[in-house]
Length: 141
Length: 381
Image 1 (spheres, rainbow over the protein chains, first blue to last red):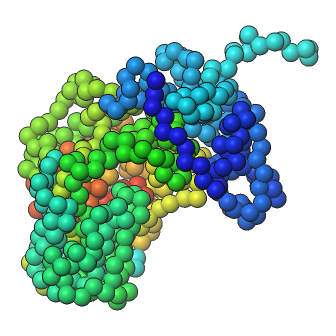
Image 2: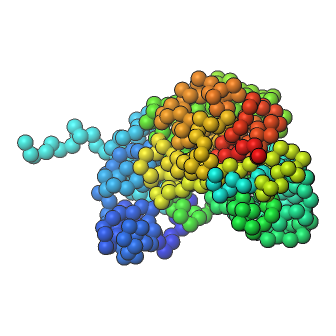
Image 3: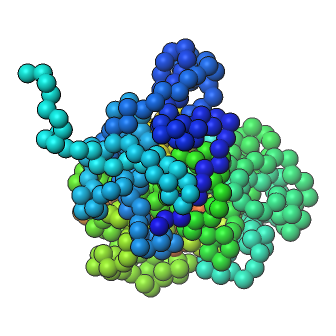
């Protein structure tokens, strides 16, 4: 298994890691103008408010880019697929893609949020989303 | 003419480039520094300013003791590693222009192969701001940069073989440069494709810059002193930085289009505006390449070719010594050495002086840039 270096929780991102413990991917949200911002910063660069809340992500998105590490320092048995997810919420988020064969990884593939504990570190991860054909048909129409 | 147009690079110096220098980083800085001062026809008493990187371990006052610099009236450091490589010259130039110093020594020296290696995961604890990356496995530059490069490949349908064509050129240039670690060791595209994956499907081993030991230094002073120099003076015709609100040096994942390098566009526009020159006026370009794809993104951002055209541009021979814009004529950071980009500036100086081992004919203007910071060098007077 990969060796995970745990996050060092800081003043400005403590809310996020608390959210992970509750199976939520929280997005910092300006309390005044409502804009999302990631990575979080303590002041809104648009309205300069320091008041903010945290909005749970919808948990769905697409793979914007991806890599498979073959770096010599990587544990060879199980390379991690690192992805940049374009969340449907409108932000990009770096994570890992799990439960997938490497040959199936591609740009724009649909993914959904899940949580995994790796090396005792709980992290938000993503897995392939069910294809539309396998979803419950819409009752409309 | 921009504010920096009245300053020159008067002298350059360096140590050998190796994988194990066998001496301290301070000694490397001192050896490179005295070489640059002598090359400028000066003595340490002529130097009254010092500029290096925030990442450099060499204390300014210890270096002054080594060199016997009696008085320091200006010093500064530039942030973000190689992203600020060319900013060092900008700082020195502005200090001279502003009257804070008469002559500034710019230096960078490290044992980056035998000591702390940039290409290895060094963190055991996540540093501030890295919680969004390190726990997910982005622990070395090859990986962090590749996550953005992959989008560029996807956009234009490129493969790793496209990047390999840059490496072949860089190694060809290094092969005839005695200063280069890969002197007399050119490679073929097949060699590139046979090198092992570092980050699939983006970077193979031969797409990655070296890890090197060595020191580099330069003396920046007023153009008024150009006539006193033992060598042809090299004018700093333009110097600029480019950074954006939604940008990030190592994790540049948040700006609109990852297939572009908007910081390099911003930086290059300033270079052209300051100098009144365009990409078509450049006779050679030294482009920082920690990894081969960075050359592609810079060629496009700086206007040497259009978006998505860098692969064909390189394939057609445009960056070769006899091409329309010879690139990294010393072999670059892949072929010569990785002295954090400052060795690229030395090659720019040699091209303007006419003393490069792979000299381009009739050089008037050289672009020396690292995406987010850059210079245009030209003959003085």
